[in-house]
Length: 156
Image (cartoon, rainbow, N blue to C red; front, top):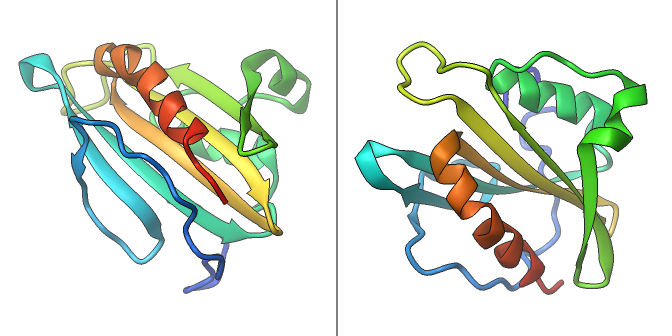
C-alpha cells in the first residue's frame, strides 16, 4: 500500500477469522501484511488480485483510505461530501461493513483493460479489516458478487 503511514510491522494482532474461499480462486502472492491472498483468472489473460489485510485503529479513516485506493488505480480523489454517495453497506458477521467500488476511465500503462477495485472494510475488535479485489474491470464485474459472498462468509 503506497502512502501507508503505519510503522513497519503495525499489523493487527487479532487472529484471522474463518472464511470460505470461493472455488476458482488460486493462492496469491504473500506479504507480511496480507492475511489472505488469492489470484482470480479470467478470459483473455484478465486477472484480479484479492487481498485481506488488518491494521490497528482506523488507518486514517474512510476518506483517506478511499483516496489512497483510488490513487492506486488512477482514479481522482473524492471529498468528504461525496463519500456517502459512493459507498454502500453489507452485514458481515453481525457488523456493518462499507463497500466501495470504482473503475479507472482508461487502462493504466502496461494494461489492456481499465482497472477496477472493490473494497469491503469493517471494524472488529479495534482493528480495520480490508477485503480488496483489484484487477481488470471486466473480470471484476463478473467477480464482485463472489467477493461479497466471500466477505459475508467471514466469522470472527
